[in-house]
Length: 362
Image 1 (cartoon, helix red, strand yellow):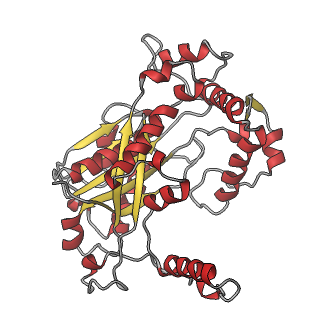
Image 2 (spheres, helix red, strand yellow):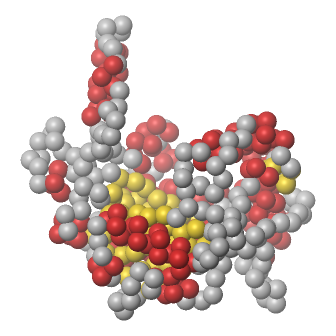
Image 3 (cartoon, one colour):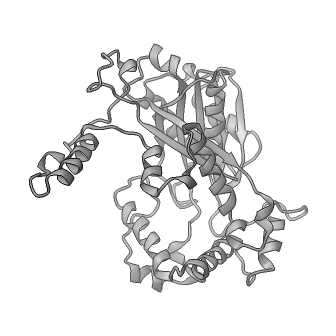
């Protein structure tokens, strides 16, 4: 028997270019994001029973130093370093602690204080963790440094060759991301760039230009996870978001089968996604895309229900249905699971907690 896991509070700092914010070190970042998460949950730090602190660029046990900004209650603090999935791995381990019954309230914390410029190796007197990947990639593509754009650029070229993807397709992803950043107060960059701007920026590794590459960044995020019993005892049902699927994978032998996409994680990402569907009894590969999307986020809001009813009526009576009632009221809250609220379990009042699936690779 495993416990259900809920996110009951989250917090985040603004992400900054390394060195831009004077006197802003990782302890200050952790204090800001952790305090926001606790306030969002309406909890004090003394409610936290374990902490998982994720970072890549820092000394050993930086997690303890960061968490101590929130309090010193003697709880276990686990340091997590797992490259690009460090934050999601910290969340994964925190959820496993709750799911396995080892704790009822756990903090997942991530922070990073980086150096300006391209990413580099910390140690030059030992084997590099990505050494085998680099060697395999060098056998099938032109070698270029820095390594990150080389790896992902080579994977992009392979995708273009296999599927007919164009440089414009990739650039539209960057254009969309920059457009969204304007509405995100925590984003490092908040400028809008057109598709032409992105395509015209300096080429880093074809097809990736400078405005498509991730920058180095300083910042922190935190989440408070809790068991169902903790949620009910502390009256947190109104803010609880259930994690109903989570998976973590690493490389397979196919990583080194001569595919640039597999070298950057295609196979293990796909496997993580497939594992996420298993608890629901259906694999994504067996489902059409729209059906798979419904399995990921099971939110049954009145708008969703009325939209589906309208589509059914339109099929039966074309031209007689109007959709004015489908406009989403401003500020409408997601519906919740009835038994957590104490409401009668009538069909028109059954309110599932918001659900989400998470997958981490590497």
